[in-house]
Structures are given as structure tokens and as C-alpha cells.
Length: 98
Image (tube, rainbow, N blue to C red):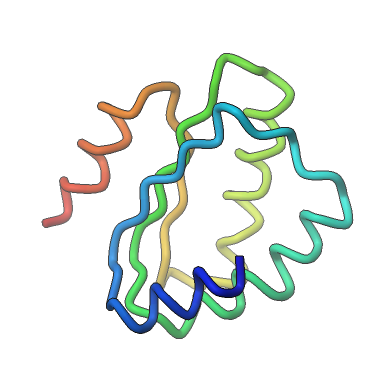
């Protein structure tokens, strides 16, 4: 994941569509690492929006929504993160700002 942060900075990525449909819900220590390390590194990049596509897994959706909400304290408005049930809605949201 940290390699990805470097690529986002090098390639000046502004919009990221992440498919989490096949992923597990991150445990508490993974969530803490994301808040303290991953999100902190993304703050200084060109990234502006992250759309996360989540399957109809209510637990995963809940965890990711909480993570998106908590990320606001790290990003302080520089990056927006939202969850979606389908890629089409996520893409529309990502591109709405363009």
C-alpha cells in the first residue's frame, strides 16, 4: 500500500476508484494503521477523491463507511472518500468534479 502512495504522488493521481468487493473488513489494527500511516501519506499528494466500491456485505460496508468518516480528521478537506454499491455510481461521483 505504501508503494501505491508513492505512485499516486509520482503520477499526480487525483481520483482513485477502489474495488473492495472481494476484500475482508479491516480489523482494528489495520484501521489504525490506515489512519496513522496510509492516510497521512496520501494527504500531501494530488489525490482529491477516493471512491470505494463495496459488495452487499453490511459489515464491510459499515466498517468502510466509518473509516471514510474518520478519515476526514486526517484529510481535513483535501481528500474525500465515499463508499458505493456499484462502480457506475462511484465513477459518476469521481468525475462530477472534473
